[in-house]
Length: 291
Image 1 (cartoon, rainbow, N blue to C red):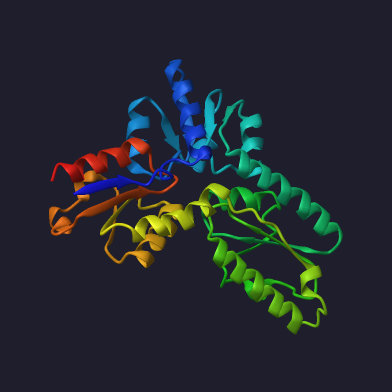
Image 2: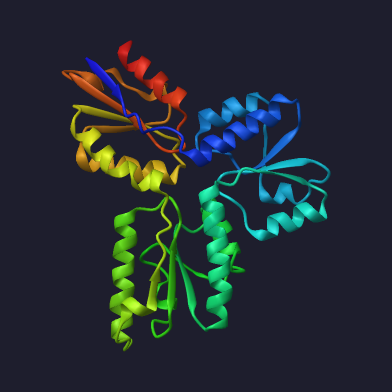
């Protein structure tokens, strides 16, 4: 049986950068706290915790002082930095540069739009770490939608500035934009194209991975997709594999692989999310070969 790994799978730049920053700080023997799990992958988190990384939630973070706290790739709202200044916390900045730039764009647009009586709409998942940081740039005044909910909160007679969480689907984002245009037309806006400002903020490493993943899923008899179960990106990319190849399986670790999946299989493809470490994908491949 041939087993092939999708070359584009594994950590995106932002996650890889955050992990390397954490490893560097830990290698110096420093006590480092991370605000939330640095990556949505339990096995990678176990490895980092074994190196000394301590994970804290936001409630625990507010009680810390005189220490170092790493901000993960997802980013944080301004309030997190205010607390750091008040409690003498040294921030180790590992926010993904793409997310950091998006935060700045949303913050500037919100202040400008607020002055002009416009609106900022963010397409994303409520409660997602990145979204909490993005909403924080607007004092949580932006309208958050997953493409279905909260659409009635939007005033379609006003200008709308649309942004997206970086890990969302491009096609679903385009569908949302068309919905908004339709409602603007219904509200009497003669030229919705002029009043809806669509900001293309989905990460290219995520969106560009999708076409290649479709082709990869089609070329194999079976697909083993490796991801943490809490990974938003993992759920989205696995659904792409499943749509292209019904014989696709989601696993979080090599131990979840079942020998009977491979009966009569000649070609297996192994791929993963942007939050899946390459070493874990390699380990899954080795496990399949050993069956």
